[in-house]
Image (cartoon, rainbow, N blue to C red; front, side, top):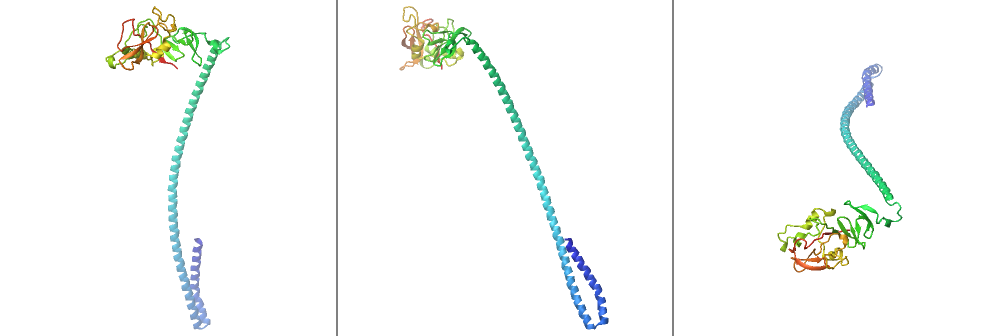
Length: 345
């Protein structure tokens, strides 16, 4: 842009010199030559001056246009710079937002890692506590098994049952799980667990009766309606529910007690091989390990197949079955009697 200005200035200076020198040259030529030659030279010079003037005018127009272009270019460039500045500010704001979000995520991740570390520390502490308990148990087992040479030798060792009575170690089921039992039947099938008797063959747990009046009184008598809690048919209006009360108190820690089936009564609770079974005296056909047992009819859970108002009983005298009305009650000490049972793994 500066070089074009210098060219224009030089051309203007040259034109001025020509205008000033031309008259002097004309006067010299008039003195030394003829008038016709002078007139021709002046005309040529005037044409050249006009051409030069035209060029100067064009150069000035170009210069003005160039100035306009430069001004427009500067304005456009300034606008682009302003736009770039705005975009730069927006980009910086977005970068700040992204940075804040990233920092927040990093902080959250750090907090999560700290929580995981705390959880891991708690787990390690619990694991250490468990290891300590295992070591203590191993020490107790080592003390208990002092002098023993086999697992089977644990049987018969003294122990204390859950209700605090003295017992001895016995094996239960096909897996020979050791338990603390008060007594074991002669055939090894039944185990006295204090409040209940366990049948390891049929996997049944029987209620153990006592001599004190109450829910578990051996001579307590109930109609089938009162025992099962039914209110259907002839049991309408029944308000007593013996098996429900047994479950309500969670007897021996369980709430799934029920009346036994005929088969369970005959094949588990009663036994024709029991001492004095079928004799003239009041000796029920029940294994002695069951403790106090009533001599007479016991309710089962089964109604008669043709009339739901009658239910089956099993007599502990010679293990006989019979059917009686659901409302039957022979009076204190005469039956019908009840015995609760539940399934045991």
